[in-house]
Image (cartoon, rainbow, N blue to C red):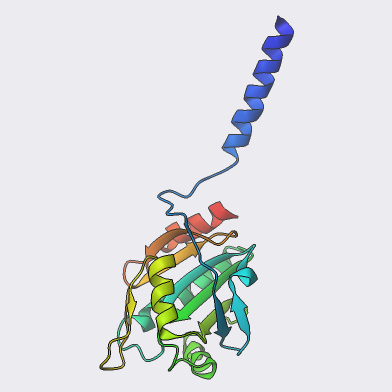
Length: 192
């Protein structure tokens, strides 16, 4: 009888201890990223398979944006610096252009420079159709992207997204004002 009690105690202890080691992100959305193929600012192909095994931070911007994109890019740059200061490894930053006909690889490279972006782990993407990015944003990231018939300003929301190593969107955060940097860093640490 004592042997059975010890075995039950031992198995229960192992199960409890193994459950304690896995942390979960609070309010996770768990949206799978649909496969995509794009062109980087270096004019190289990049797709979902290239990001597997890495945590990535994503947003949607365009280079001729007159209002929200410059602060969003500044906020992403601040987050990139914080990730580096915290010593967090295998974290990539990905900015999808919502105006791919204007935002060529050369234009995206020029856009990144004044922000002090470290292009070693930040990729700006283009090379797809306007229809693709509008549909991809809506179905995968649950966000609005729409280029009106008139004018050069693309309508889009201002979220920053945390994607895990398996290509699942874990959470979205405000990326324009009142950005929760500490929460983002904590959530990245949870995924590592």
